[in-house]
Image 1 (cartoon, helix red, strand yellow):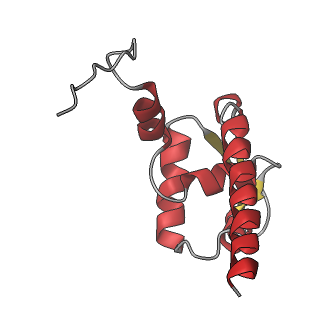
Image 2 (spheres, rainbow, N blue to C red):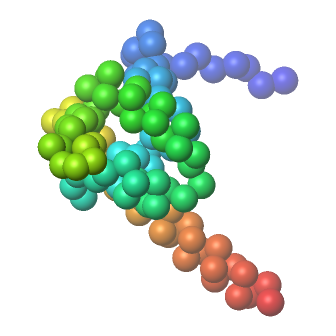
Length: 119
């Protein structure tokens, strides 16, 4: 039987878990990704992320605003319109999300090649 090795991570609390707990649940990376290119209105985010329900998107936006990751601005239009944008804290997540997207593109290309070979 193999001897169990000790984890040599110097942090008592996992920083990855803390970060993921901070940004929240499902669809949060998508929201950050679409806001990374600039402010978006609710309806624009709904069309950017077609599989998320309005209820869940509203919850995620509120959570991200409470955590200081995005800001919510009510524009003086008729009818009033709301615009969301990343705060400086939210901008810190951009490189991480961009790295995940880059891996996603590579995986997509890899799966496409594997599917062609299998056909």
